[in-house]
Length: 160
Image (cartoon, rainbow, N blue to C red; front, side, top):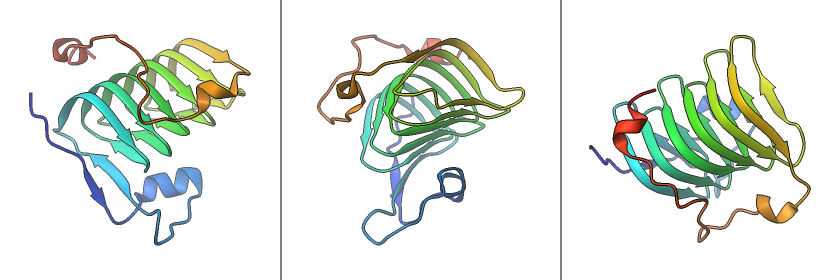
């Protein structure tokens, strides 16, 4: 499996800026992009937004936004602030704020949120459970935490 590393670029993706109405500043204007053709298996942590166009299996923790692009395929447990699914996602999401499934997005799994900020556009697919929890501790994002002990193999992720 090709395990290319993500690269931080000096501009937040236009897609992320439009979706979340973000304004960039000189201290917090990075976005991690996992490009199409890149396969990553393991744990990803970022204090910055993440955009996935490749294939990722494992665990993802992002203090900011997470976007799975149209070509993106993710099989993981995720903890993030906001999430947009344009591609395929299988797993569990803990989101402090909004989860958006676009018309091309597919989510198979569970969404855990403080409030019901789950938006599904026409033709978007959601197969799973939406769970609302009052416990604010679960939404705090910490680099050292583990979301699960589930092993996900590369063969399984390629069966999307």
